[in-house]
Image (cartoon, helix red, strand yellow):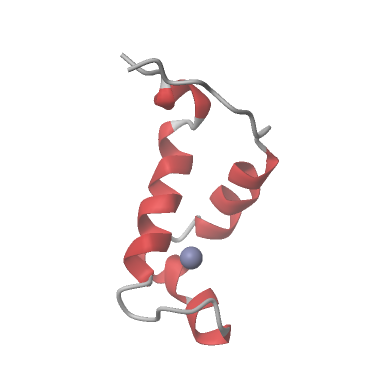
Length: 63
Ligand SMILES: [Zn+2]
């Protein structure tokens, strides 16, 4: 099983889901969009900061 959960801890994945869900309302990253994630997830700004602080790495999938 791929260890995606270790690469991106659950609460940070939640931010990604909320971000993508907000795109159902606003498709661009304009000023209106930037306020949307916090409507669904009050700690969105902090989770985005933590997500952006994670190192980015490449993992080869062999399946
Ligand atoms: Zn986006």
